[in-house]
Amino acid sequence: MKFCPKCGSLLLPKKEEEKVFYACACGYNEKIAKNDSNSIKETVSQKEINITEEIEVNSLEDEECPKCAHPRAYFWEIQTRASDEPATKFFKCEKCKHIWRDYK
Image 1 (cartoon, rainbow, N blue to C red):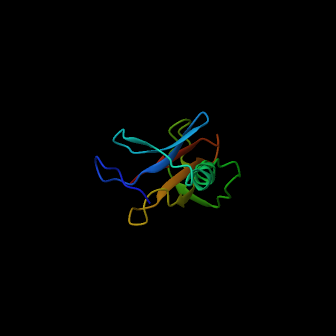
Image 2: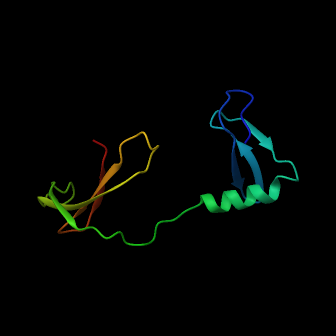
């Protein structure tokens, strides 16, 4: 692990075009040593995740759709943030299939 010398945050590998480097949220960038480049390239490619599968939802709740105003929607929860944060609740309209999040 590497840490930013400016702010102390964790440096994460970042890929832009063919260049791979360490980057921090504060704007600091650092070149990657040649001996680190193979493991970093694997990490960057594994980090890019696309969700394409349909999530099976079974539970209905009385929640009004913001798009069509239908009064009922399916819901499910996914842990999208740190484990000490509450899960994000997703809704899918029973009628129009619109999906939205609830951060309550």
